[in-house]
Amino acid sequence: MKNPEFWFITGSQHLYGEEALRQVAADSGKLVEMLDQSERIPYPIVCKPVVTTPTEIANLLKEADFDADCAGIICWMHTFSPSKMWINGLKRLMKPYLHLHTQFNRDIPWDSIDMDFMNLNQSAHGDREHGFLGARLRTARKIVVGHFTEAEVQEKIGRWQRAAIGAAASGTLRLLRFGDNMRQVAVTEGDKVEAELKLGWDIEYYGIGDLAGRVAGVSPAAIREKMEEYQNKYRLNTDNIRDDIQAVEYQAAIECALEAMLTEGGFHAFTTNFEDLHGLEQLPGLAVQNLMAKGCGFGGEGDWKVAAMTYLLKAMMRGADTGTSFMEDYTYHLEPGNALILGAHMLEVCPSIAETGVRPASIKPAIEVHPLGIGNRRPPARLVFDGKAGPATVTSLVDMGGRMRMIVNDVRCVKAPRPMPKLPVARVMWAPEPSLAVSAECWMLAGGAHHSVLSYAAGADILRDFARMMDIEFIHIGKNADPVELEKELFYNDVGYMLRR
Picture 1: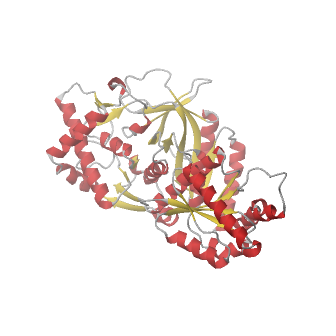
Picture 2: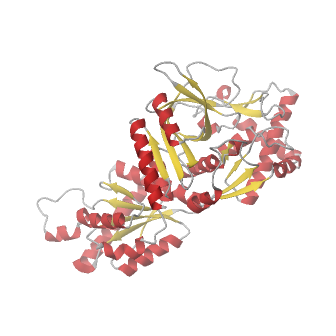
């Protein structure tokens, strides 16, 4: 979507007369104007004409479905709008749908309230009628309750908008796979046909030789330009050793080649695999990290599901992204009372999760060159940094055979208790909610992968809304997580999905 917007649709009927309908339209316009001016709502809200008949409703919702820039609809019943009028429209609706249960006046006008006021301001039961139909149709929808001037209400609408942008991005996502996934690994497998049916992802295969050929053809001028970009953004920690500089230049050539292939093919995300590097001198490292920082999705070891989700979380939080990266649970710190997870990867962690703010040159992410010990190639250049502290989520998408399951764990990223001077990779440490022991048990009960997306911006509420829009299973591991209750939830979900199928 070039100019995403959300349509606000107010329901009423002709029972109350034309004067009442004119007032409904005026109130709707004022409500939308206030929402549209809120800093908590990132995308424009467009007020549509009040709908009062089945034909008006069906035509407007059909128009929303086929409008290229409409990212979702927000419905509100100012008066009573008999919901049988909405059946033909809602049963075909494909766009994300939020039901706002509010009313124009915040308080009852105690001294002046009369039957005219009561007839005009009927959201209390007009929206309940509308809510019944959503339940009867089993329509996937978000319900937000409260006065539209409240910060919490606006915040919920804004975060739902971000999930809807993710749904739109999912429907057009193209992903480039270099090679297959790592041999004998189960969790990175998945049904690509199901992913396209359910999530809209177009997943394409290219041989690594296609990339290697492009790398060999990158011009010296393009490499110099990319090196200038690296020097402006990062700290070159190579002591100007010629071999190290050549290693960085090779990553520059890889990034130029990747950028060209991604742009030409309209791809939003990609994967690589250290078991498939024929024709390349290094495993892509710095090149991948810098592309992720620009909004690309990535998955290591051929993990296309996490590559797509990395892109989608970045797309959802565009303009408010405080750090989103491909991630892997690497090793534990099991100190009693201070159990932590060290997240990292061989090379490919996005610098958006590094310490933010105005950074002196001495603590910018450093470009370093070190042997990798895996992949059987020359030492690759990579960014080395520590992740920042703060609340975050880690998200995994897995194929359960017949359905996709999204698993989200709330975490608290922390500063490492001690320096790690001999670990030449980007890394971040976090304490998972409610504890490492409980979260790990729940994660494994649900089948969560060792790869995930770490995000400081996309909370579980946004991801739950996204999962609802895409009709995929959602599991949340938060501060109240209980393995016994989760096991029941997983069992009930299995039964429910079998019945649906």
